[in-house]
Amino acid sequence: MAGVSAIVVGTGGMARHHIRVMLDPRHRSTLVGLVEVSAPQRAATRALFAETGTPCPPFFGSIREWTRSGGRADAALIATPHKFHFEHARDCLSLGLDVLLEKP
Image 1 (cartoon, rainbow, N blue to C red):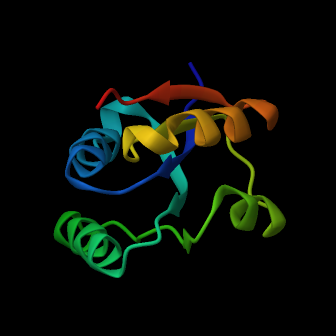
Image 2 (image 1 turned 120 degrees about the horizontal axis):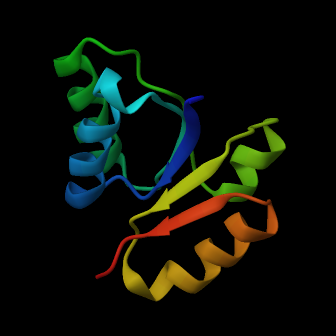
């Protein structure tokens, strides 16, 4: 079974829980980008990657920015505040990504 490449949209506490699970090599997933606007959340996420000894993927300010950079992935984990869920899910689905939408 091939691994899944994914982006994470929103890197708050619950997203970091999911990221920690995704970093387990048994899950064979590769994080290829992180979408986050908050500097403190970016810092906490970088610390998680440093703690696990894994290089942190690049951060982007928006899904559009990630797309313009040439980003490609199989899936997106959306863990932003619920008021942004529709917009983020729509944008990811329009790119052909499978979407896991974290409930508030």
